[in-house]
Length: 173
Image 1 (cartoon, rainbow, N blue to C red):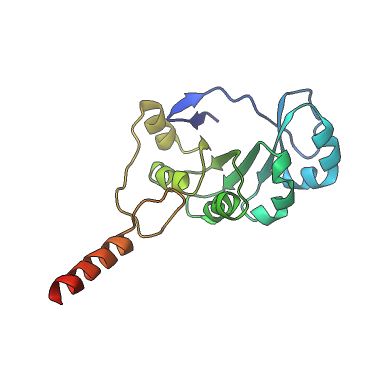
Image 2: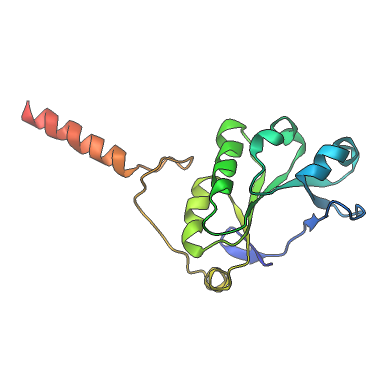
């Protein structure tokens, strides 16, 4: 799958290692959560950057104490309608203070990318062909008004309504 970060397609230096595969001598390894939990100390002692892949039903709390040892957390979207990885990414950034790379993988639609970025996801490895085509062309979808607050600090529609209501009350008095 192609990897997109900083608005462009980039080479992927990370190697995803399955549960049963031998650990390669790569400098950037991503392992599934189960493998991380089983060989955590061995991985920490390696001279490599380490990342953990979380399935959609695995959550940030499972690795919260280990985040200082991780350079990357991969969150998976098995379907564009499955939003659990949004919550996981937001928890990693806002509740656990993770400042490494959060990578989204899977079935992601172009319209979702801006919302993923608002939750702290900064790299995208997607399977949806129309999304890949638009990302390669640099044609992102954009939204200016949001209902939900996020880590980017943008004003929400609710904030705007409150300000207008406060202004109306001030003028009426």
